[in-house]
Length: 342
Ligand code: TRP
Image (tube, rainbow, N blue to C red):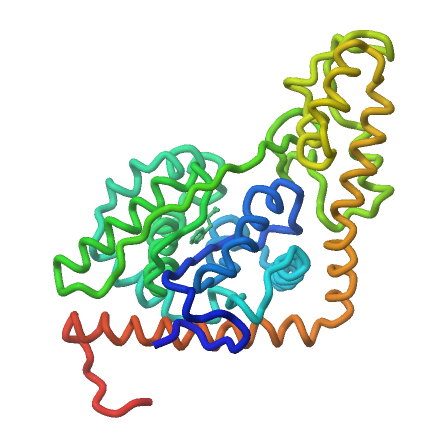
């Protein structure tokens, strides 16, 4: 049975399923784009892809103020498509629209101990920053495991920080299969080399640090943000020799400037290229690279009905797949009580 019914793709070539998830916490920035999305866009041709906007996961942080959630979900769908995810090739949908995620989460929660969850570094590191050390937050990785297993995904493209969560999903799949009978595929992480992108303060790019370059920045705003970037403190004026390694602007050049190793690094080292000019070139090249994405974004924002329709179609495809897996779960657990389909 096909995982999702999409006419235009080379279905025969697709063997495995991928589930990827992202929290709708504000608009996408360069770090998300280069770190995750570009990769997803590449994968959509080879796999059955399910791209999930995990709004329930973001409740662990924003549960008390959900006023911006709908807008963030919409913005994320727009960003996904603007970056090149094609709704003809993959299912783009919202987690809370497919209730089976919650159903499997509950069943998985029976198969894991509380100490296993409290030992996870992601839990320990974040727990003190949260306003509420909730039951929901403790169960975050269990819900993530359900996200993955409800589609019987083989691979999950994630950053290294998510390694333990994928391991836990695999553990839960194995545990279920051993306790009842084999229903689940054992998922594996798909680590892909992620280019390093730093924010204006030379720390990891993040919205909360306000050191980021959102995709929907105008070219002017991008220029302003890049002007504010940290550079080699020893290079004060043009003529001073610089060190491209360790300069966040040079990292941008490596991504967006052809031949950066020949054109940017040597003149920076000799002092011939000053930081002002160097930033100007980085800005121009970045703006050129982002232009098609920004243009598509602007178009999509003008068609909200289309965007919500894409999410509805994605929901239907995802639901079909999730229900078939959930039926198997119920049969394996002998809880398939219903004699008549609702
Ligand atoms: N925890 C992931 C993150 O913070 C988001 C996520 C939720 C996810 N469910 C997922 C990622 C399922 C991959 C697969 O990035």
